[in-house]
Picture 1: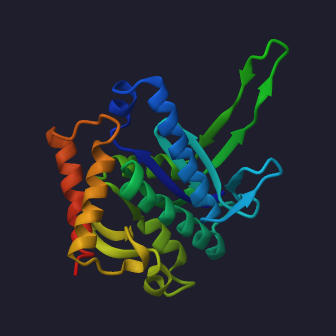
Picture 2 (picture 1 turned 90 degrees about the vertical axis):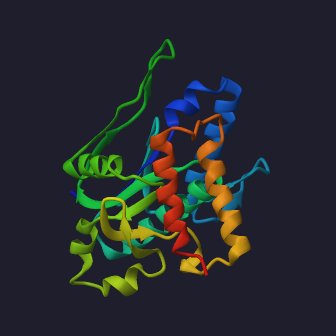
Length: 243
């Protein structure tokens, strides 16, 4: 089935794993899961019977699976309504990670994707948990993500082609994205702030500092040429929001 797919991967994930102890890794993994859940719930929370407040996932129509350094959000079909919810989720996840938690890069794509999943536990507590995702949409989203030279998320032309006869593309995407010459092609990129508002000098420097911290936190080195290229391209995009 054709679906809308938002594919993200975490940048510097290998160094993150190799340069930190298990206690730190567990705490940071919980931060990542927190942000995934918050994004799916679009900031809505509810209190459980035990008094703990958790993200309210009861009404989200977006599916999610995270495997190692990849986070995949996807819709159940290719409708405009579901695309809009996917954009809300992906937009929130994109800026929360890049500005405050962990640099990510990603692509929103439209094509075929299917999943086979489940979980079984046998009599000796061994787990068999199939999570097999297949389809050219996932493969192409992954390949395009690997070619991105920044922390950010691109809306692929497959999405534009899917919706251009139904909506005014520029108006539809305005709350979530803007056109920008991304390090490999001019496409729509998800915004890094609320509704593309301009940043004054103080806000710009604070936001820039947050991005640098996201790149360098968890003992991830940033003094190598590849990381510097990714960081500089991300800051260059941030410059477009500056007053």
